[in-house]
Image (tube, rainbow, N blue to C red):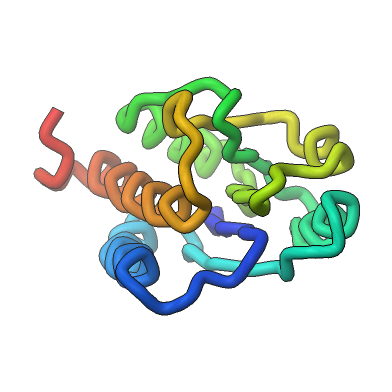
Length: 154
């Protein structure tokens, strides 16, 4: 299974970009060893309104992908449960798992309808660049849990 971060907007250089890069660098070799095909980031342009952003998002979702929309109103999931979900979807033969991170205004109705599965990193509202860094860290943590490495100390 390939993991895809599908994100509205371009992340500029800076500390958040460095965090994302570091966690993805750590996660990729562990993920390959666990049967994941890769971890990618796909950025789509922001602007033009929610409907325009929705169209650009939906155009980038691979056929047959499972989509998980990051949304503060979705359910929260602990790290071990998150790791278990990733392994379960991989074992079920899901070809691609797409994590959606919307733009500053949220998601257009077409995206909400097409991607009804949601995940929250708590009830707070987070800047999108933080969400991407937190997602990268949680993917690395999930890979570490699945590989049995000591990174996750729960």
